[in-house]
Length: 71
Image 1 (tube, one colour):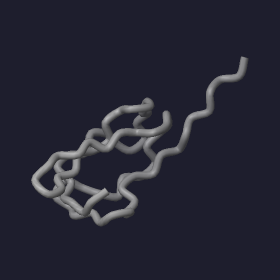
Image 2 (cartoon, rainbow, N blue to C red):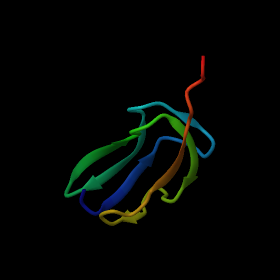
Image 3 (tube, rainbow, N blue to C red):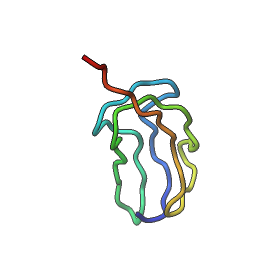
Image 4 (cartoon, one colour):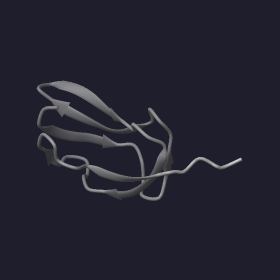
């Protein structure tokens, strides 16, 4: 949870993601930190690009959770 720079963005808008899937990598204090999805869903918006600086608590992506199929 430190400020850092975006090294890579691993997903695209409208892409489906699974729990634990890599979303992006942030470099902070010379360490690479992987940001992974905490929920299954679809990427609605990506608010960062490679090289952009992010601050603590800043939104980077918006996911629309997927609803499990009902039996």
